[in-house]
Image (cartoon, rainbow, N blue to C red):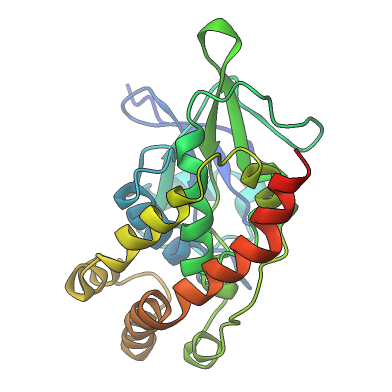
Length: 256
């Protein structure tokens, strides 16, 4: 008997849904949503490079759910069916930081600087308190998790023209300000920057070419995407991080 089961639609504009997969594990799944055509691409690209930077993101993969599965769920009618979807392992007992401060005892504070560098490289315009999660660890510590890379590249509906105009300025993110207070050594930013600089252009091309053919992206958009990621890491990322360091990080440290 199939273990595939729909549980519920989750909060948010991407219509993510919680399922039990054929392996009996729970997953958060996203499919193509009209008006947010690049959500799946952003999630996959973000996931691949988050893993490269060893960020604490849930294990994710491209999966294949049958069309009848979607046809049976009225709440998912707005989705455009494609044979491939993006799925992330569900993190039980995780809470976001919408209504609580970050705890002082973080289990993995070393991931904060790489996350901020990651967000600036990929122009993540939606790093919020909703997509920073905490799970309990022993001795009163809390583990950080980062989810939802749907709005990297400036938008969940980017195109070649918008990629060419991605802003070179500070991101509006109160969670960045909260997180920065937990970075005790500024060297952590520059170490993360060096790791991004070390990513070969060929690897970026390979990640982009793993995108399923059924997802809405043209060859011209793929080419511009590669060019944008290479250009931002080579020409703009250091400028952005120096700006963040002086305008956000130093003032946050001075408040301690």
